[in-house]
Image 1 (cartoon, each protein chain N blue to C red):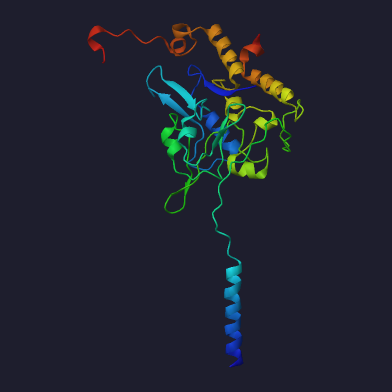
Image 2: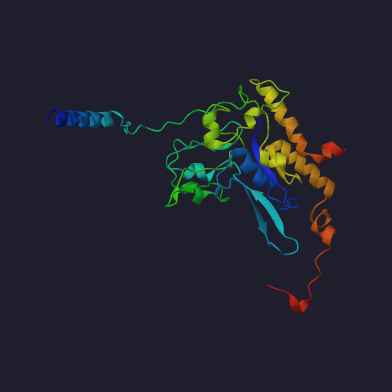
Length: 205
Length: 77
């Protein structure tokens, strides 16, 4: 039985936001809701690292634990999904999630907060696979079409891998064995040179 | 006199009809729906070719093969 997972390779992500765009286009996500986004650490500094983040479909999901109306469920493939007909939009899941995955659409004059929306691993929701109701609430159900998440399949540098955890871990392992690790990595240091050694008087704490 | 009576009767009938159009607001307990299996038949026109819907083994194989499209080492070697 497959157990779906994402892996993002920070050595490869070039912060192009192709994954974000693919997700938005595939599911017709409204303005202000980002099921996936790219986070950059040390932005603008030599050696910056970017990583694409969305729901990680945790094995022990904190959102499931704190939801007061128990709207979450986990499929046999390990995908954490929720039922929007039960969600009350309270936002507890948003506080509990370490990745900031739960999103809340806002509209109207007073910014009315709607029901929670998050990455579905392109697996839709509890409605019938590929139905209009499922599409309207959760977007496309690519898994039932025999496809993998659009973000991972569209990633130009293949930094973002998605699929069965064993398979994507194996792909990542092969990659690391081929390119090396640490200073051996074909990445920033190779392309732009290693950072200059710090002089004793100019060290920063 | 008759005209006033007709107007009043029409107004009463309209008010009664407005009541008939009111949607039920009784709270019902929310129940979790059971989700279908991803390998079950999907009517979508975008189903990837090469696997038979309804067959779990075929679906597993399809996703395993499709995941290899993310493995560039499988392409270049």
